[in-house]
Amino acid sequence: MDIDLLAKMVKEAILDHDTVTLPGVGCFVAELVPSTFSDKGYTINPPYRRLYFSPKQGADTYLVDLYARDNEEVDADMATRILTEFLAEMKEVLKVKKTVVFPGLGRLRATRENHFFFVADEDLDIYPEGLGLAPLSLKTHVETPEEVATAVAGLAELIEEIPGQAGNDEEEQVPEPEPTAEPAPEPAPEPIPEPEPKPKRSHRKFWRVVLIVLCVLVGLLLIFVLLSRLAPGLLDPLLYSREELQILRY
Image (cartoon, rainbow, N blue to C red; front, top):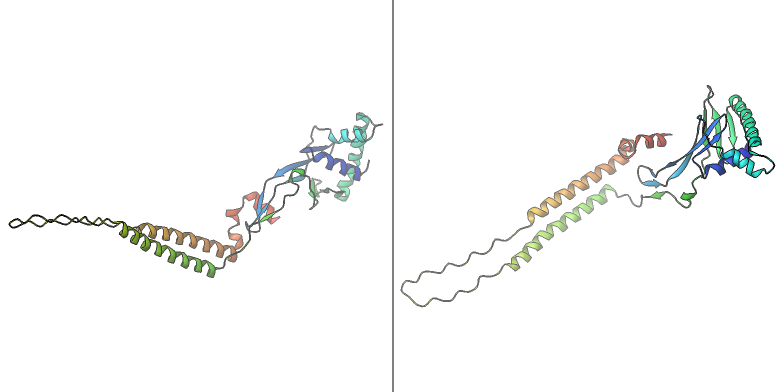
């Protein structure tokens, strides 16, 4: 038994299980981290499994079973004894040197008070289901304030033309009063009142409200863009949770 073999067995076991116990030392724990945002919210990172160390002892025997399976002449009792003795020696080395390297996994380290923690390798991949997943960037083109102002002006002109066109269409649709038959000549005939034209319906008020709402939305967008440029850290508490902020700061 050596540290290379131990690291290989831990990595093999952690691919299929969330907890792998090191008897007498603690256990490795793998947890699924959901998708997160980075780069000020412009990049979506795919989910992954994070590996860390816990001083709590588990009840699993995955390492013992792996060692006994790969060594036919070793039974479960002997595998338990070999693994326990090796881990006891590794624990004493860790207390003295403060670091034990697990090739392909990372480093198991100890604090001054001999509290153990694990630092995984940056390229560690223990999430086979996430094979092929890559960060997705939402940063295609960032409009400048001048471009936004030009777009707003063009939109305002378009909205002003629509009510006029609607009014003309409405005016064309108003039916003309039918001609009335001329009355027979009678003494002092009373004039026949002409029918009053139907009032024109106007949509100006509706489009004015739409224009105001669009201007407010564009103004908020400009404020957001300017704040993200001038004070990027100011919007982080609104975009990320407390745990995500701690990860970004780390």
